[in-house]
Image (cartoon, rainbow, N blue to C red):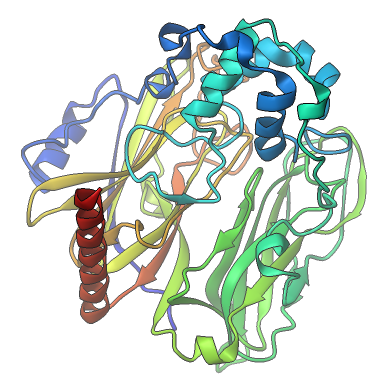
Length: 476
């Protein structure tokens, strides 16, 4: 199973002067609907609780009965002693001082940290961490009512939380079938960006189909591990170790990847793994730090039935051509970049992970269908947070399908002004690069490569699913 390289091209434009890009895109794609719009407004995706909620039943909402279950299900994994969050939300006395801030952050959808617009694009996502509107409404009403504790007898049973050093996907898949550690590296307490790129033996003795992947930094090193990319290498006929396929990518906040049940991401036998670990010193020296990859494999009898290969690819908005990486954000200015990719075979988009650094503010994924002129909005993140790099994995029945020749459009917006709270210095020019203070213009996208028969089968299955859903709705 080999990676299918996409045909690609790209254009760039500053928000201040979009005319040239707008003309090129209009001529290349379609005369309607593809103008360069302003950046998404994150306020448009915020639940308008302050304006719409009735207080008629606010006095009936208590911490013990109503708020504790919400925190238990959505917050306490991180907000407990010894976990990653800076404060604990295990008891009423711990939560009450933070009540107004909790209300503010959930209404803005900054917490729980799953930054994905709620009102546009595909909403059927695996491992979706977003609070429901009902839960947000409950929290707002509780804070407005003065944050009453209620009867402690109403509290839910405590949860036995997993050890934070354990694999998070183990709850779904059990222990990993195979673990690949990096070589150890001692991270200094202070300094500049560091890249550690060892090559290690994979330990995989036969070709396997990957079912799920998780990258686990050490507990001590997780704050300093900005990202950890990994690539399989195999030997060619001359005995040289050459790149075979991308294994996975990790960045701050990412859970992992789950490969669809009908696809195979290959783990080649007798391979090596080349790590690309980006450390940024966090204030504490970390001796002999090791990052690990956990792999879950399909059983051989399942793998033998898989017809299609899945690949994870870094899709640059500059098409991966260093000669096109000419975007620079002037001091106190904004920028938009846009990249476009097409394939000579049908594909299914399985996941979308925006990537950027401190000036990125929003990113979206679209599909343009030349035969109909339709521009399909797939996903949008309007309130990008550089502390949480999340892979948005679509539910299998909702993952977007691209016929051969359709065009994948990725758009990103950047803000190098003082209005951007993440901006360390709006007086600086910012260009592309690997340092935290540089910027990046790409997305990690997992794609299953189909043939025409497989594509038509998936389309038919979805049409039948929609027919059954419509009939069930009519019967109610």
